[in-house]
Image 1 (cartoon, rainbow, N blue to C red):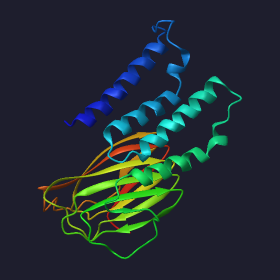
Image 2 (cartoon, rainbow, N blue to C red; image 1 turned 180 degrees about the horizontal axis):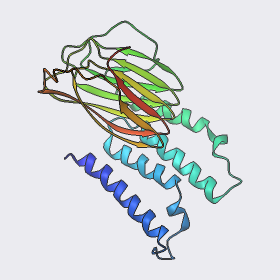
Image 3 (cartoon, rainbow, N blue to C red; image 1 turned 180 degrees about the vertical axis):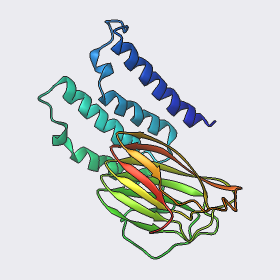
Image 4 (cartoon, rainbow, N blue to C red; image 1 turned 120 degrees about the horizontal axis):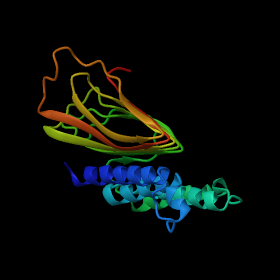
Length: 229
């Protein structure tokens, strides 16, 4: 079990315990009431993403959204949607200082590319990435108020465990992978979902030593895995 999985699981366990104690009226009175509001979940998720993700874009956005909504809950006249340009500022900062390898920022449909790793960012936009690598090893996919499609139907996994880190908020990602790939989903969905909709090949996994793991967070968004277009 990896350290980031332990951190994510521990976060959810703590949130559940705190909410249960609050429901049972067993929480000491000196705790501020905002601790039990739903924006605290977003703030916690943002912190987890900042601590565990190589790509900090999602963490910064979730943390900011959580703080803005937390203020609006405690100060009703405050409208967080009036400050939407903050998201553009954060995206700009993330693009300037984020990892550049394999990143595609315009999200336009393009010709197939032979690339082992990817770093997809779709913010207020959408597009498709077609990868034809014979040793695909994973990467990062971030979608915020947008969506992206990753076509791996003509690719082959590298030996061992290959990981795609996913973060979607008010957006989503669709992955097209061969039906005979061994795929494991470890996505935590909050007010969203992530499903494997492939038709698995009857003969099983011919390359069981090669595995694709898709993990991460989906918040107010979704994602799916398909084996055909």
